[in-house]
Image 1 (cartoon, rainbow, N blue to C red):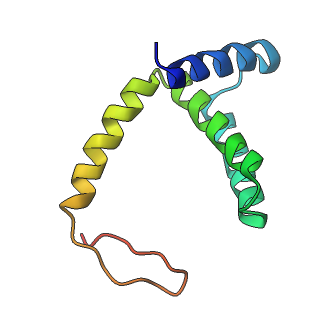
Image 2 (cartoon, rainbow, N blue to C red):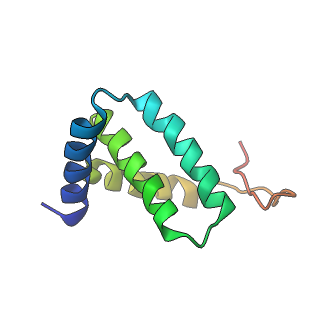
Image 3 (tube, rainbow, N blue to C red):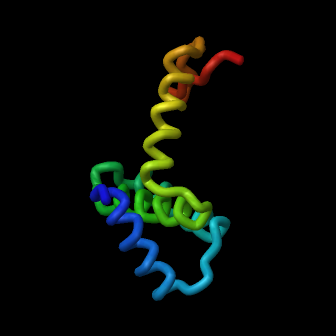
Amino acid sequence: MNKWQKMQDDIGEFCDKTFGQSTITSKLIHLREEIDEVEADPSDIIEWADCTILLLDGLRKAGYSTEDLHDAMLKKMEINRNRKWGEMDEDGVVRHVK
């Protein structure tokens, strides 16, 4: 078992015991709150960790492992490499051209 899967399993065990029947929706609501905290202080790695914990547990609740996520990320990066990209907007965001 890889260390990321072990981490996801540990997070899941803790979350199930501590938070009971949380849902994917509740994880996403909490994740949005944690993203605001990262935005307030991007240098705080603990806030980044909070986001990752919520992401990994939401992923688990959706029925996916870290290996599934890894494979999906490889596929998505291939898609991204083959896309055409627009110009940066005023917020610094670059979106793909449809």
